[in-house]
Image (spheres, rainbow, N blue to C red):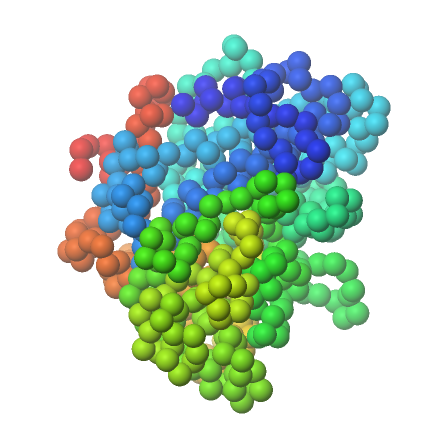
Length: 522
């Protein structure tokens, strides 16, 4: 159970941030004696985030119709047959992150009186990381469950009250935004971390102020706070002339696209979860994304057709640009075709796999990653560009739409694609929004975002049914494992857009109410 389990979360001091593992020592109020104790709990928050990555990918992809899973448990979700007893809707892994964050927020300040070497600046930096973890976790839960228990106290004592009811989405959103503002208000959110361990990953693998900006833009867009979303996007995108700071920047060279994923931690990255084989950290992506028929996650036919279409368009421009090595264009980099290794036969190939987590950008099935330690990116600069573009579209007006189109075309240019030539004076909101959504889908294939983009699209409906119907139609078009009529029937009920509260939580907490669609047997 989540809330009883929060008290028992355990950890150990660490020799390296990627080497943190839980042990059998409770994080009680007697634990907090030194800065190393705080560091260990903060590090374990990242550990639990990494542990949750498989859940993140499945939640974000299998309902969206660009990836499908061969796993039986995942199928309940992708076929819209999930029930409260389905293991795929368990959210305990996310609440573990929240539990760690709450502990740091409660106890880190008191450690300053125990350890004179634990300076206030370091303590506040730890608070920033914890506030991000809690805020990001709750946004993930809101996107998947809408209303969930909002826990902001550390459950570390036997007298804690674990019976917590659900909070409304609006209240959780308010808490998320306050957490980000509180983190930024400390003035301790880092631009960059000093490289002290020889791996050079901390500025991308730990929370920075850029990650806080991206998270705030994300939650504001979800909540239709368009001006605020644009404001926080601009904090990342508006780079003054002559700025040489180590801040995230959009990689413009098409030939460098794959560097985002291999070796990872590129300058385009804002925040990504790191694994390191040298510290015995692996993620199992080798079986999830593989070139064999046994791969857990595969492209759907819908995604395959879009990959082929975009690749054909990009190949022409890539050749004209002198980039004709057969691996230019994001779809060629992101995918591997087991029965075709060159552009001439690519369009007739059938066996596609997700390559961005498996390969090294070389079109050779033998040149896979030496270890299963591909990073998982939560935010990169094109996220922010498209969040701003989407907010501008929904804000409305020819000037806003012109700026949105420019952002879209920067991403298309990097993918060796022709610029879109939409006449914004004669366009409408849906055409502009569809242009943004297309770039979301193609740029971020298999990055755990597809379902949330579709869901956000459906949530834009104002009662005329235009966006809701298109949302449902796109889900139907991509899904290839269940009947169209069933999907349409389920998704007509907007409560079914979200998952049920797990039975394991309902059964021990009488204050929890089930999400409406699942309140009776389905």
